[in-house]
Amino acid sequence: MDKQIVLKSGDYTATIKYFGAELCSLKHGPSQTEFLWQADKSIWPRHSPLLFPFVGRLKNFEYTHNGKQYSIEQHGFARDSQFTLIEQKEDSVVFQLLDNLYTHSRYPFQFSLKMRYQLTANVLRTEFEISNAGSQIMPVSFGGHPAFAINDPTDAYIVFDKDLDPLSWQLDENFISDTQIPATNGRGQIDVDEHTFKADAMVFKHLESNWISLRSHTSTRQVNVEIKGWPYLGLWAKAAAKFICIEPWQGIADAANFEGDVSQKEGIIMLPPLNTITKGFNIEVKL
Image 1: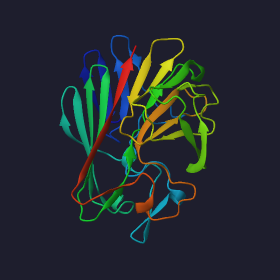
Image 2: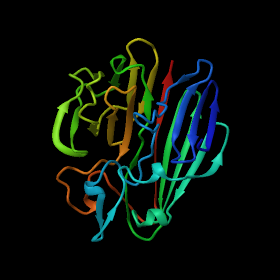
Image 3: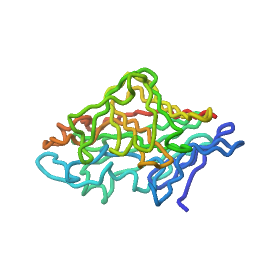
């Protein structure tokens, strides 16, 4: 089993792995209710991977910076990296990933990625702290990818707290196309079924909503994910699987027609030398 840290606050626990600094459990103890997908390897083997230093897929898994081309995995390498524990308390933990020989060939920058998790009763905060430790401007994007357990796709529905009729940007072979379609029929709600994600993820840009809620038609169980301040949102699941991902993003996959330098990529942050960006989101669970 991967080495893990368990946070405790009141009746709730959150478990985070050293590998990928990945949240792998968010549970109400007395009822033994698990809110997070438990990574069935035959369907999707992850719980809540971290996306860094890029969100989504780059065309041909490549990008250009200062006239040189680099290859990198979809969603970057943080989710498949071993983090170091640098701070631990009963209800919080901080993990860190530094640049190394493996990252340099993919991403030629000196960086520190710190992941902070803070559990306060039924609310878990996930916070990214990204520092440019080098002497050149560093292009970066990042985001979360938590997968929440559901009873069945037909039992689940998704509620936007402010956007009544948001448009979903459609994917063209993993890349953002120019096509947008309504997602909620003007009601601010997506009634999920086994067909909802057959065309892959729903991608939203610059929503007004502060929260996205995942709810059940047959119980009071609920998950609220804060998206305020995050310019992009992904909703995704494997077709007919018993999970739904709600993904706050500071960045986005390449556009289908993008061919430029990474500095021109939509959603990218050009972080100056010796600067730091910090951003987080809350997950609130209810029974």
